Image (tube, rainbow, N blue to C red):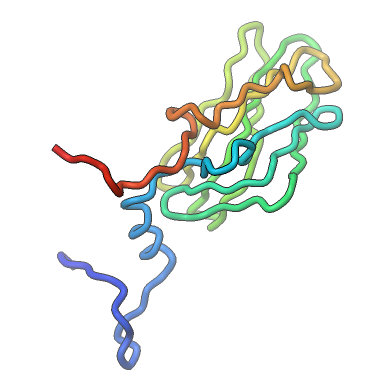
Length: 168
């Protein structure tokens, strides 16, 4: 079909729309990222032992909305006894699983660790919320181990709209 149009009322079942139609529509003028109305939106904090806690908040990925309504505990894998690593906390949109969820991407233990890369393709799109430095043999995470990446536009960023945008 060369032409596509949307959101007319159905007459005898001649119009059907699905989530992808609405996501495609909203995705044209609302960018990916976290909503910035509250400074702690989806912020990560140290918790008990090798775990972190995501604060309540909301985000937008590829035309789909995510909301976390309460503090959510995320467990990290056991620390390596020889080398440190950097884990990355992401908000992951999955077309295959049809959901958006918080996840921890465990980094590789190394003498010079780097955070795992984000996946961004037609099936999975990740926003990087924080990087967690997991020292060798540590039993707990503290605030100093958490690097907030929510405002880094290459990793996450905040939701913007095209309203008021200038085109050349």
